Length: 107
Image (cartoon, helix red, strand yellow):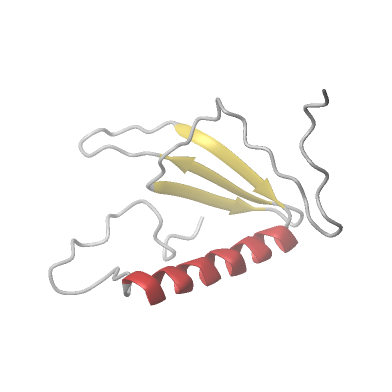
């Protein structure tokens, strides 16, 4: 008996996610670039702990980084249509931390 997954239809890709894949939580990103690459290092910073270890590094071409940005924007728009606006500033919200996913911090 053949245990191969069914062949994807033309124009589709069969994606496999390993059962032992470890998901990471990230609340901190360092984003750098060269002419050929965008590098995103992801980490989890704990309150009161002055160090963090990078848990994952994503290296993309600028083209693929732009496509990822567009895909994230579309997914967030879909999320907000379903669940409401994600607020990042305003009354009752904590101040933005001095580190993390702040686009004002250019590296």
